[in-house]
Length: 226
Ligand code: FES
Image (cartoon, rainbow, N blue to C red; front, side):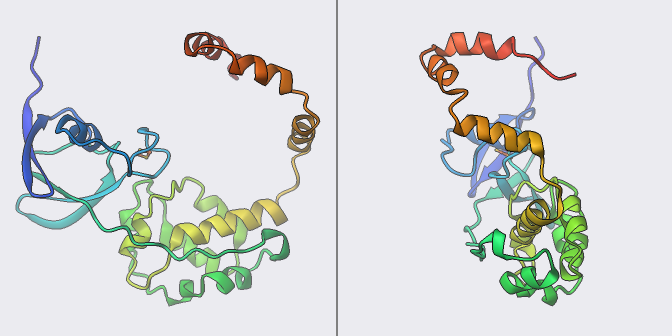
């Protein structure tokens, strides 16, 4: 059996030897950390696990998702303080799909200096600066579609020198887009009505009585769309 080589990593200044094949998240657990925060789907979708790190001899601050980034020899990991992002509270029904609706809650978008830090740092390779420009111009559909892969990890906002919270801007744009610009999906409306009328109630109650193993069998044998 071939042995996986071990590499040294440093977590909060303390050295640990971990298998080189692990992700940062798995390496932290291997080192004995129990992750209760900053850890969600473990598959690159939920955005809970943003990290910053440096490697020996390299001043550059690197970023990534802990569940997707492989450990490197002499990687220095540190926790960063959570920066509470400003988040607008609004009633989407009363807003219009225009630039002024976004400016009302996120006026800082007009302070963008075009440095591109948000785009460079995005682990999803989204052109964040570009969709902020769409937001500034009230191009709601473009802003919503260009940012569609955002998982709200917050790295863009953590690097923005003018304190734009890009991922909240795009959530507002996507809400405006779906509420006011996209045609309503009739099949969704019908399904919501069926749920409200209790059409699936008995089936759900039946499922709730099953064991994990029974549920697993049903899940694995479900119809899967081509
Ligand atoms: S844990 Fe969900 S993206 Fe990493």
